[in-house]
Length: 112
Image 1 (cartoon, helix red, strand yellow):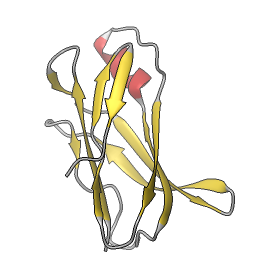
Image 2 (image 1 turned 90 degrees about the vertical axis):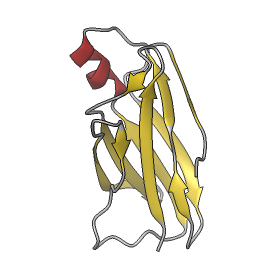
Image 3 (image 1 turned 90 degrees about the horizontal axis):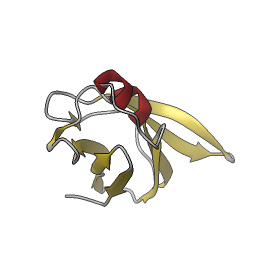
Image 4 (image 1 turned 180 degrees about the vertical axis):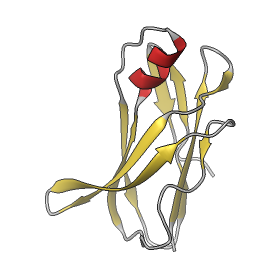
């Protein structure tokens, strides 16, 4: 079974981004369906965003990171109210999708 994990590093602070809400969507029938999510832990990680009852199938998925909420909590203005990362999942593979974040920029990649 495939698994999707993520972590966020706030590069402007040099620390993990704690308590960032993340939503996981699957693209089905020409619309996005919410299938999981959660909030990052003290290490900026969300290791398991779907329950045992959800089986990830081949297809298109999206992670939506609630970055504005995070920076508002720190009293910092941000240019991005949220960050969306869309990717294609192949069956049987695990996906780690990190987010390197600052108030005015971000980058992501497929990690291991």
